[in-house]
Image 1 (cartoon, rainbow, N blue to C red):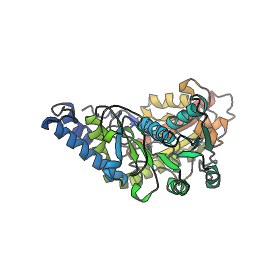
Image 2: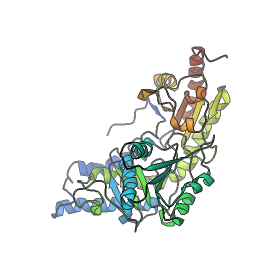
Image 3: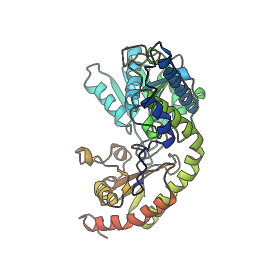
Image 4: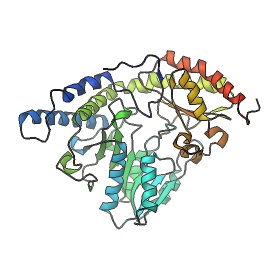
Length: 393
């Protein structure tokens, strides 16, 4: 196993996480001696199939679901697309989708495609957010119509960590006979979830956000929910998703879900304390800095901070020189000069949105790392502001 790089201070866990050593250990037999196809009739493959069954139960336990409600996919994006497209195929007479203005591109871009490219004339309502990134529930209620096929609302925002009231929203959708999907990629493993008590029909998660490997995800499909597969093929996943099972990664995800359940208290105590220490110090010592997102209704690991009159990419480059890994709220690296669509939807001033940095922590972060970042950031921001034509000092 490749050891964690001691020279790197990794605070970009909402992008991807380190694969936990315990997860790597669980995966290794299925990359070496236990290589049988779980769909085979022979015992050698059957034992592998049992390991998938065990992993399915572990994922279900973390979500408060039943094992048969868990379908393994390749990632959160596939799960999102599968849920939304299944709803539209199940109810072809319905042409309306309700979502938000701050969704991950996995949902955002799919809805844009359905609205403008497919030719099926789907109508999309995108709910607004306020300056703290929160939804207006009255707007949501008025958006639900007889023509609405599905609501797709993320449980927690990937950029700000703001948590949406999905339990209440799902109940409102159910009362009107509307399917409800939530992208919980950032939520699973950070806050407790009990799907047995909720009216959520579909939930998406991605393994690499909770210390499992990349290339494995889950779509939860509530028992009794009508479903049309996206990936056609063999009988795998109870006929819900064809294709040979990614056994090692599925087993790894199961182990990661076990670990997440064990460490959730730490996530909501020690990790939150580290997050709070980081943002409180930076906001106190760096002038013209601001927190993006609700102060308390937020994931315990996420802090999105804007530093006015500087570019996020320039900040990241200087942080990188000190081995500090985070991400920018600006989309400049993708070839656009526009800041994050999430921050624009929140009405964050242009001069601040361009200079936003997302710090996202994990159970592997330490107070010593936090203090290094606190020590380095003021000089980085000061040096960049000296170069800014907008900074008046």
